[in-house]
Length: 562
Image (cartoon, rainbow, N blue to C red; front, top):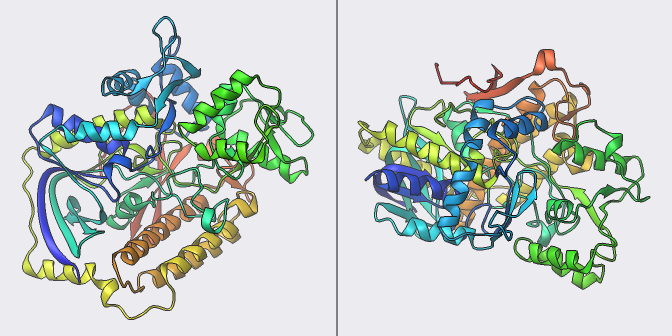
């Protein structure tokens, strides 16, 4: 039985990852406000950068400008981006990168003292310790508290305004009622919705952090926040089996993509080679019987091979272990590539909360940053830092004059029952593990997973919607014996809510805009006259209501009006 503990703060940050840490640092540096970070894991090694990263993929070297970066993102996302959001982040990429270096991050430099450029917008770093650096910087401020090993479940709303959150400890029989004058959601995106590349014990080998379960999205969905872009799923092109990054090879040694016959194939599929098209071309080659597909590394130099080893040891050591174990080093054999299962993530694609220029959601009092914020693809690490900064400054401004809220005795009793529901319910027919596997099977077969080559159509999506709703009903009735089981149930429930919105958004966009990411068999062509728009949604009375929004151009600033 969980017992209540009440906390209050000025600024509450849900999620202690990249954006969350930088939001906290910004708030602490610019005000005397009390800041509380609530983190499901431990802030030192949590979020997408837990294992490190070997490049910052959003930086503007000489010759690049915020305008050129916006044009790059606009083309890659086929025009459906919030240009105001992308531009505002691009203006800050280089400044926040320098600040990260001042915090202790080692960024590689050439003989002239310039950052070493890996790609058009990418610079090399030694980033194994990037998350510990952010965590240690947070620890230096007395007005920042961190609550580790606590899982947030829902927002507390008063008259459609967010005034705090509900959470439970993963180590003690405690649930938290946390009141705040402003809340920032920085929880990351959603992995684990679809059946993964690898089964069983190796299922955690995936592109996106497996512990990012879409909790922040689900909380917003249940509270009625407007969401955007969930049909623009992200599907990574990765090294087969290890699911290690391919960009390290493609950009590091300029390796081209070839099919099983050794033929370069990308030119057959697109004039403008977008990120989703690199994936879709690979899927198409395999479907034509021309696979497997590879990155052509055979014949690279010993020095180039050593550089690849160093790069992967800094971020994905499983790839180096695979090379050494098999004896098929990249210099001797091409590296096989494959697509991952789909993910819902606002840092690479456009999925997330619908926000205004201040990163405020449609729920007053709630701001978002990083992968949780929608409409702004390709923000990567520097973009998450910059967005955390913007959200923090906006939350501080909003918090001035706000009063902390309280629960009445009756309301607290209702919350107590709600937080202990899984412990009090009877033994359920299915457990969280079985429900999760069923969800992934449904999404794979009926909502465009690996098993169907990512293809969707209206008939299968309707089946997926029905089956996911049935699973959600089962999941909300499951029984927990302990805190780990309670967490697993909550994560499955959150994923199922996200699945509902993903399906509804894919049903709503009746065209094919991002081949691979969103390939609609019923509507195989792109249709700009009718579909150059955002597909948004609000969750009302158990149903996903679709809302269409017009494109916001650079120079325009969208602000909430309803």
